[in-house]
Image (cartoon, rainbow, N blue to C red; front, top):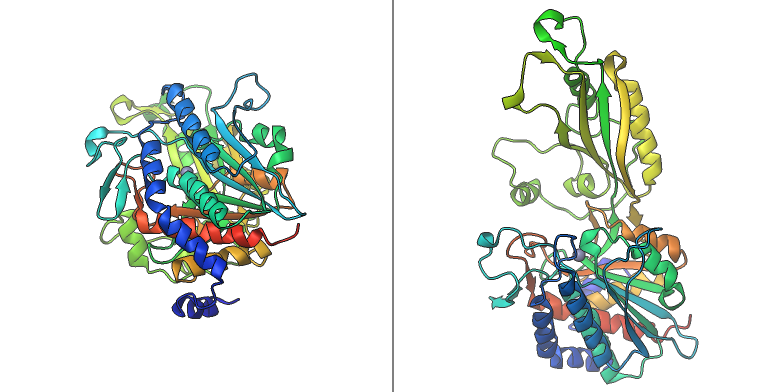
Length: 475
Ligand SMILES: [Zn+2]
């Protein structure tokens, strides 16, 4: 199905909807106020998963989510689980696992979201208290109101609407993580430990964005990341810049020349071996990006080609920190060593380890004066590209078109969701769909985060339709 026909379908006001589809949409509407109340109750729990915050709140939020899962009456088993972090004995934050096995040889769907939230930051920047859910002009304000407690509620409310209309044969596993905002530290072990019940034909990750409040997105491309610290050293010790400057190379000079080699004149990445993806991107104006990013008047954007291709399909390199003396500490010395944090985003289609090797080769070749190079703090995350032609993506796009009355945009994200790579590794046969409840006004992670309630309703409807249609599909 092409996007144009989806638009036509949308404009025909759901003429192709079956009686069951209509019953599901009616059940979603009828259950929406309850879903909103449930969302508000979750937002009241300050479930920040970071170490410095009270873990009792994350536990309370896991218990609240488990109660919601129980309350659907759909799951055979609901439990709160904690998996070890890597090979250590330490346990990650509590996650909720709810399972309903497939019947009659039908397919299985894994529904993912997370119930932990980002810290609220400076409370004076919030117009409403961060943990007092507040409705203003069709949006619900509060930390986690969107990211990702609205994702949790989307799954719960979609399952409820489904069960009201039919006795679904589709297998449903619900996995609501408790530490996505804290690096998903126990995610991989969690998948391993519960692989039997989590294994699914289709995985729905409800933790992403929509194109607008009127147009849904299916996120089909995520850039990966390569981050590392690089130390350049030229001398055994600092030396007087008057005595030796002009003959003895300092580390800052080596760093500046190396850093300049990362980009071409237009600011595009100039590292051989970092690839680009061939993605069809929607139109977006440079003005839109400038406004969203707060680019100052007279400052030019970098790179070339369609602006969304630069953000979704091409690599980028950012230096996010430099360890060097601060200006108040500056003395007349030639610096022996400097360390910087290099943060690269890599295009879908290239593995993070291959990209890291290309960066290391570039640095080896472009470090001037024979400066010594050392690495530490390496962090690699693979990019992700959805096969948008699989039955899952096709069914999801149709369900979105039917629920929203607008065809979805196949979107990319410049950022990374590293745990997607864990899902791909653990369940290579599954189709992974990245959906979401956010919109450009959401301000996830920022003060005044909010959820657009129309988007929430449509996201629930789309997921309920998708589940009902998956319930017809044999494995
Ligand atoms: Zn999130």
